[in-house]
Length: 161
Image 1 (tube, rainbow, N blue to C red):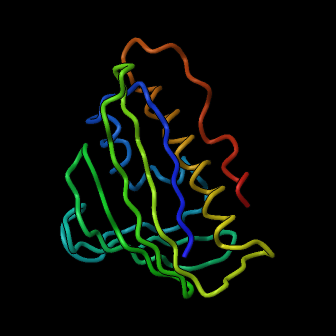
Image 2: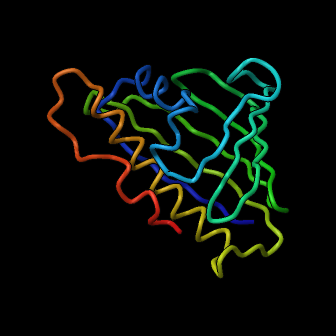
């Protein structure tokens, strides 16, 4: 089992950060690896709901997400399955002393020694998580009224490949 974790702090409120996070149609601007992203069963972001996420690179696959718990703007949990890999992941949206929000994700990965393009799934997951959440933070920061111009997001989307 491999445990990962990563956190970012955005200037956005938890409600705004959740609004950005929960709009799956914008995920490709945080890491340009997605094809079709669609809710397959149940209402979005409800326990038991299922979300299929097509990944188009570095390999083509579909990740099946099952939402295990969700309190919008507070916390989220899901289980993923794809390519012989299973993962449980959680995301918390916590008030930060700066007035913004700390978005903290962590999870456990169970795999079968899968490598993709010569890199282990653990390494790809770590790089992907850093890239995705960094770009997510920049997107949130650009939406905060009165915030100074943030660095552009979308840059470095391929860094994890």
